Length: 115
Image (cartoon, rainbow, N blue to C red; front, side, top):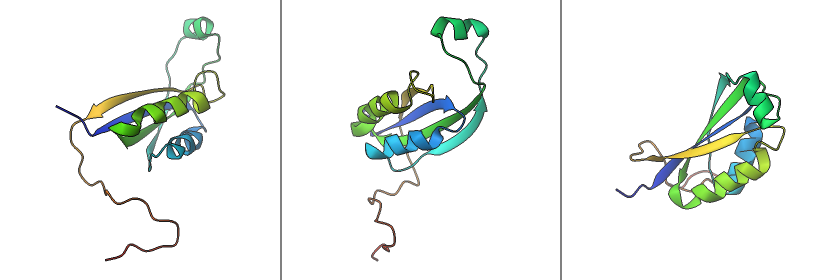
């Protein structure tokens, strides 16, 4: 089965979800869903990764065409990855079916869709 879409999950420190979306949009993503979360990493993980673990997290789910998935993931790694203040991780999963998704490109602000 060939997949047409992938969902990207990006988990970042609280307050960095908009940076995730800005980065993803620059690579062609159209939107996402932000979920508030709480991490459970141990102090051993802090020592191993040599970073401070902030328990409050945001998870951003972004549905993208498979053709732009790699570009979006690389941009997220660069802009909000573990070596940034967002301390983000990102991964993707294939999506076998999508409903309710408009295929029309987004219009510039203030323009109405032609009928």
